Amino acid sequence: MTISITGLTKSFDATQVLRGIDLKVEDGELLALLGPSGSGKTTLLRIIAGLEWPDAGQLVVAGQDWLALPAQKRRIGFVFQHYALFPHMTVRDNIAFGLTVRPRSERPAPAQIDATVDNLLNLLQIPHLADRFPGQLSGGQRQRVALGRALAIQPAVLLLDEPFGALDAAIRRDLRRWLREVHEKTGSTTIFVTHDQEEAFELADRVVVMGDGQISQIGTADEIHDHPASAFVAQFMGASITLPVTLRGGRAEAPGLDARELMTCAEADGPGQLHLRPDSIALESDPASPWVLTRKDSNGTDLRLVLTGPDDSQIDVDLPRRGAPALVVGGHFRLRPLWGAMFSDAGPVAPAAPIRLSA
Ligand SMILES: Nc1ncnc2c1ncn2[C@@H]1O[C@H](COP(=O)(O)OP(=O)(O)OP(=O)(O)O)[C@@H](O)[C@H]1O
Ligand SMILES: [Mg+2]
Image (tube, rainbow, N blue to C red; front, side):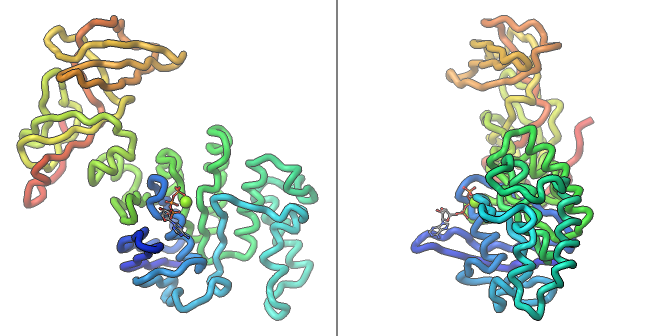
């Protein structure tokens, strides 16, 4: 089912939470919705689910006006941010719930419900848990059951609001891979909300970055990684370092900076900002550089470095400990970023120049 959203706005009291969302989700696509806390992700999902109503805009799913349909007619599977299974029901009954509460005329026969639940238990790899109660499950197992309950009704659209939010990193990774497989088998058009860019990029066909009630960028993981559309997106991608630079011919220049490895940008010449991630900067000894190593810590796998530069500015650099060059506190180093995004204070050059990879 394609989902087509146009001009969607929503305010709570005086606060505008969605400021005109335009978004098209393709049939069978797995779309990740990424954005900081409060950017409106849950609100958007709740509107699609029919739990909330927009002030303006359209929501059309497979050609049908969903704003004219009540929630129970929308065939939505929803796994909530703060999920709740029914504690007094077994895993099997939790998964069957959406089918057993259907009106008699639409309800499948008991044997058919059993067969559907058995299939899902196998797909979710939890057949051995069928007769347990939620209180007897781990967090990751409960998430699988919540997903099973959402999938049981064969949803037209599957909405997942940070389904792995409360789990630790290793389990998240497993569940992520497994969710991708489940998605490929069921083919439901899926919108997956997460805070975690790695999770979004690994899982999704396309990623939507939301900020402050608007869509900041839509693209594949590679497109967003290579060409963040704004400083906000770059910072959200982990570029916590901002350096003042001079842009010339799409390249960044500054004392102690060697930006040769970066792609050229289509930004106007003149003053601008270069956004960098602490984990993608190489250091080279250079007595002429203004950047001085002022602190060096290790967490076992990575070195956490602090460099102090022009006007006492400080930046963090993370390097793998093994293979790191000899780095002596007090030494001068040139910054050689391997990834970065630059924006001119004057904006992009017009017309937009082609963006090419550096030689
Ligand atoms: N029912 C409500 N009444 C008033 N304000 C609300 C309501 N629901 C959400 N908001 C506000 O709308 C904004 C967006 O909330 P939303 O839950 O959509 O954000 P989010 O992107 O899902 O954030 P998080 O990542 O923390 O879950 C927030 O400022 C929130 O306080
Ligand atoms: Mg939320």
